[in-house]
Length: 345
Image 1 (spheres, rainbow, N blue to C red):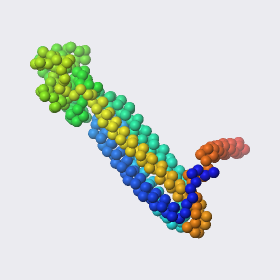
Image 2: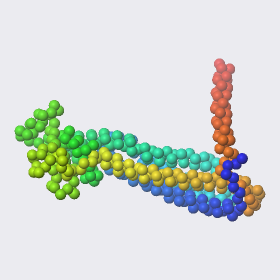
Image 3: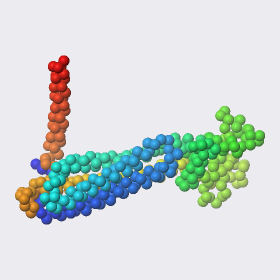
């Protein structure tokens, strides 16, 4: 028994084909939007690529770009078939193509759904990628004279000002690295000697942060040096006073920014998936309705359309039986080939 069987006359078939043709072009537009969002997300990642520990973060935007292009091509092809279904003579040339096309649509819809899941799940690996990338980038902040690292200071400063953040986890991360280049240190000064000699690695560490950590909204002039020294500043207590630097770490800020973007794209891809499923079901009705005309020579005759020729259980059983038959056939052919080799030898 066919699943969701519907009777069609010429008027119903024409209305269905016209509606599907319009929906297919909406789907083409949606595919172009997915492509554009993937391209935009890739460009946004490129802006901070120096702070990414690896290139795996570009898998999702590349997938979105590919899926968007596929959606445009598949839906344009489906729209053409729906347009030709208005004329039974034109539709006849598509009969042999229709079944493989519908199978490819099922595969494509699964790919779309997986793409949406990847968008929602990417937040976790992105957090690890940024954590390691920011940690390494902060170490290179001082290397303004080193080829390949000379722009790291500018990148980090621009990022901290744009995303209103400081450090990796928080501003105290800057206390643990030497972010001032040796070029700008007077090694004959007692303070510099004391700071370098105070740690086993011989680094110039201080309780200070770069200027880009300063919050311009604070009424007090920015305190970025000797943050933990209360006596160095008038009427200041770093334990109780609201510091005039950004409190949020840059990893959290970037993950929040990219994560929000990914969630929006994931919702968009899910909506496109629903649209693709609807037009695929509609195309199946068009295909079956055109194939079951009572009188193929009379386009005005009635016909029946359905989603599946049998019930879901029967369809699944048939698919499993065909797969088993194919596997057995492969085993038989392999066995016959071995016998032939043995006979020749």
